[in-house]
Length: 272
Length: 100
Image (cartoon, rainbow over all chains, first blue to last red; front, top):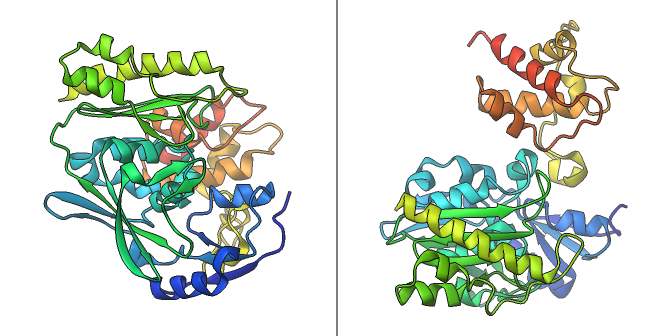
């Protein structure tokens, strides 16, 4: 199908993007890489009246070492995350996971900011930034604010971003423990994860086990109490609410969460 | 990129290269096209423009990929006819034909 009719506006600066968003209010959606929004528009599951294209804001594409954290511009493409030498050294979990998103064509266009703002619990990067305790920086008509990742993902396609707010930067603290793993279970090459697990040290976040990415807090608590990996991983499904769909039953997702968490923790420890 | 998921308006002001734009002005095939021809990297041809463009992009980023890198580099393109073997051979042959 083709999208419903809409007005297209290209923002030449962040300020102009914010002006356009406040001018059109609820009728407007930001467009970054477009590989989440445009497919939804073609299915007419999303029918924004106005598209504000922020995809040419090159100033928002960067990966910088800021000492205690890495600052990533919201418009950094998955491809650039995947091949960044800096991320490969400091945040290999993020670099690797970005390389698991879709396929090369998708990674050439999709952005980390777009992925996070879209708020799909089945996406890879939301769980990764949750495991990394990242802070999201947003700019809106009232200025700039910082939102902790634990407070950013509210539900299905629902984030803490308010109308007219643009995600501009993702700040990821350099992890104290270097061991990491990203486990993504799919049936086909470029599927969303049926279930995924992101591990950084003893932090564990789950893909597609609820309406938003979630930390596997029962697992983390068990690890903190000294439980061996197998025992801790057995608690991966606690506190989750996976849905049943064409790909998996609830029980299968819960099983996958346990198995992938065990594999993820073991791989992370082998890398620490 | 996937032309179905990029608005024409997003491309405004950019240069767009399609499979028809690969051959030289005199009609000489691009080395990737020639490799697909010589390695029989197609049957019905339906996937071929996409495979060729994906290969051109892949080789620009990685001029001498391993077989595994070719296979994962073409993950975004499906073929129902060939089983991919000759496509992979074609990309590797095109890489070998690169003088750089």
